[in-house]
Length: 464
Image 1 (tube, rainbow, N blue to C red):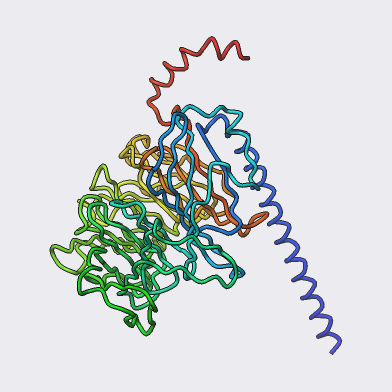
Image 2 (cartoon, rainbow, N blue to C red):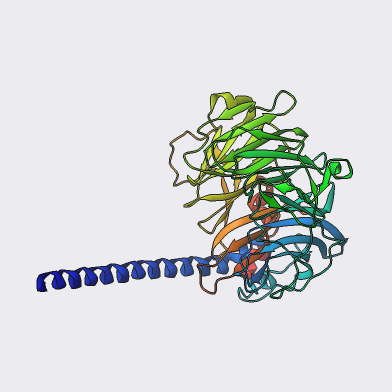
C-alpha cells in the first residue's frame, strides 16, 4: 500500500514538472513573439506607406470592403464590413464601419509610427450595427451592389442583408436579433464558411458540412420560388423571406470549406474541402464535377480564389501550410504549377490582387499575412524544393498578435489591405483590425526605384 502511494506521488511530481516545463517553453515562445513584434513595429515607418491599427473588444472572423462613398484631397472614405464573435454576454454582430483611407504618399513617417495597439483607430468609425442570429463566420459583398452582403453562420442557410435599409441596433444582452432581408435555403447541414458572390450576376454559391455546393440567384426571390417559413432539414426559419436554390452539386467526400466563381461567368466555379480535393465545375455541361483533383494538398484545403486577370489560374491554401497555384487547363494532371512555402501553420485565406495578375496574399494561423509575386520566383519552383528561401515572397506583414483569419484587398485603392485577427490566445485577447499599404518601392520595378532614389541621393546623404 505504501509503495502504491509513493508511486502515485512520484507520478504527480513528474506531471507537475512536465506542466512547468510546458509553461516555461510557452513563456519562451511568448517572449520571442513579443521581440519579433517590437522589431516589426520599429520598421513600420520604413516599410509602410500607411498603416492604422484598430483594437477590437471581440475577435473578428471576417472582413470585407464595401463601396467607396467619398473622395477627398488627402483621403477617401470607404465602407467596411466586419464581424464580432462574442462570448454570449452580448449578441454577435455584423458591424458596418466608415473608414477614412489616407491617399498614397500623404502620411508622414511620424504619423504612421504613432499607433497604440490597445486603442481604436480615429480612421475607423462605426456607422451601423446589425444584431446577427449567431456568429458571423463569413461575409461576402455583392459586386453589383456593395450595400448587399451575404453572411454565413452556424446554420444550414445563407443570410442576405441590405445594410442601408437595416435598422441600427445596440449590441446589449437580450437585444432582439435583426431580420435578414432574405434567407437562402438548400443545405441539409450547417454551412459555415464556404461562400461566394458572382462577379457578373447576382448569384450566390455556398458549401457546407453536408458536402454539397449550392447555387442561388438572388433575383429569383421575386418569383414563385420565394416561400414563407419552410422547413430546412428539420429546422424552421421563422419570419424570414426564403429562397430555394437553383441547383445543388455533390462531388466532395467531406465538408466544403470554400467556393469561388469564375470572374467572367457564374456558370463556372470551383470548390475545395476537408477531403483535400479541388473541384472545377461547369454547370453548362452537367451537375457532376467537370474536373476533380483528388489530392490537391496534403491536408484540408481551407481557401480558394480565382484570378480575375488570368482566368486560367486558381489559388488554394491548406492545413499543410502551403499555397498552390493550379492552371485549370492542366487540372487533369493533378499537379500545381507553383508551390509557395512560407507559413508555419494552416493557411486560412488566399486572395489575388485586384491590381496585378501575378500578385496575391495569404494569411495564416501563424499570425502573418504574406504578399507574393510568382513572377519573382525565377521560374517554376520544383516540388519538394527548399522552403527556407520562400521563393516569390514579396512582403511579410507581422502586425497581428494572433491568427490572421481574413483579409481583403481594396478594389478602389489596390495596394490597401484590411486584415483581422483572432487574438484570443494572446495578451489582452479580443481581436485586431488593421488597414495598411506597403511602400511602393517594394513592388515597383527595381530600375525605376533606383532612378528615383538617385534623385534624392543628396537629401539622403545630408540627412545623415
